Length: 151
Image 1 (spheres, one colour):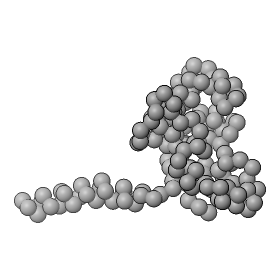
Image 2 (tube, rainbow, N blue to C red):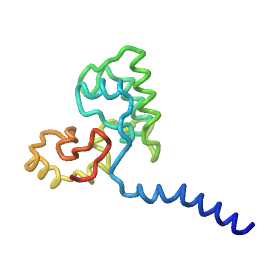
Image 3 (cartoon, helix red, strand yellow):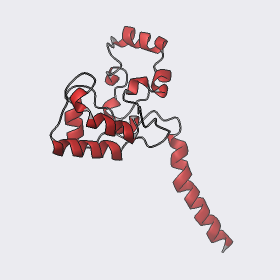
Image 4 (cartoon, rainbow, N blue to C red):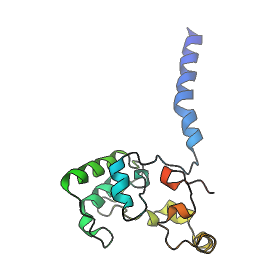
């Protein structure tokens, strides 16, 4: 009986904790798998993976598409609902969010500014002729697939 219990406990540890350890420090996120999200978002800018923002951020963003960073990105109700549902379902769900002011710009998040400090940004602009931090694929060739490991 003890051997069987130890086997079960060992299997649970292997299934639950080993994948978490493997992902620690990983710079990758799940890619966008919804064709409508990919098509609509990438029509104007790089289509950021939903895991970059919390659910509330995506909800607020999708409800204010008439002023999407100074542009009118309004959508018909059907596509709007599908895209919002996908973004929320696949969003980052960790961390505290200021409900009165959820983050809207990925480039202003603490982890992003730490990864892309002034020196890094200067080097990116010189080395890769990067004009905007929204051009993820200039430095992260697999960014469209959610792969952000440094190349």
